[in-house]
Amino acid sequence: MTTLSAGESKARQARYLELAEILSREIAEGRFEVGSLLPTELELCERFSVSRYTVREALRRLFEAGMVRRRPGVGTRVEARMPRTRYVETISSMSDLGHSAAETSLRVRSTREVAADTVPGGVAPRGSRWLRVDALRESATSELPIGHVRIYLHADYAGVQAHIGVDGLPVYALVERQFGLPITGVEQEFAAAPVAPAIARLLKMPQHWPALTITRRYYSGDKLIEVAVNTHPGIDRYRYAMSLKLEGRHEAIAELRI
Image 1 (cartoon, one colour):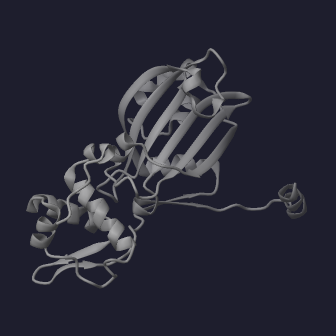
Image 2: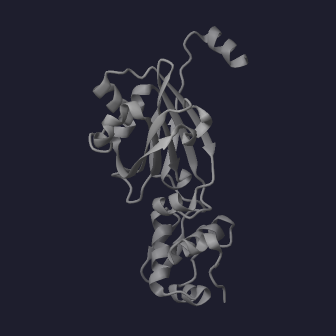
Image 3: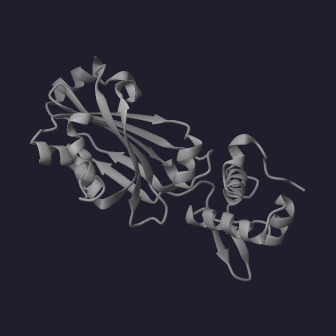
């Protein structure tokens, strides 16, 4: 009989999430081939020493991820080795960032003032103060959050706090509207990064699933206005697509070679 891990990180998760993580990993590794049936609920209960409720919740998570399909009288059949994407964000210009925000909603969980040395990348001026906002990004096309967002907003513009997640506008657009301050530049960084246990729980995702981290820095002239760190459950619920157009082909090629 197999028992669930009692390690410190596992103890922080609900048992059905532990079971969902184990089964999804076994599917990914080929223990259960696509098209094959998973063990019955009773067999899973006996193998992992858990209740039928726990098994059903774990299987529901795999179903929501597109990995299995449940059929009465047949069983639970494996549909895919990896979770399937549910939300695709396509960006080709800065205006698309605002359009993407309008298609989703931001549910604020907490706000607090922090010091400059907590802003990622060491880009905040020494001695400056920042408003940190933690929120979940949600989509009408998914029952689960599509991302966790941690926003660092320069304290000079904290007056937009009451409108974050309410007006359907991205934070930088709220700053532009309220303070008349144009955002003239955006820097983006992409990384595959491990997910902190607390954020994994908020996103309701097993910790071994891949995650995409997008960090955006918004500037008005040389002044840093906002840093937003977006964590998405990669292939589970989110995919990022970007198209680039070369203007002035010879100049662009020269820049690429530098």
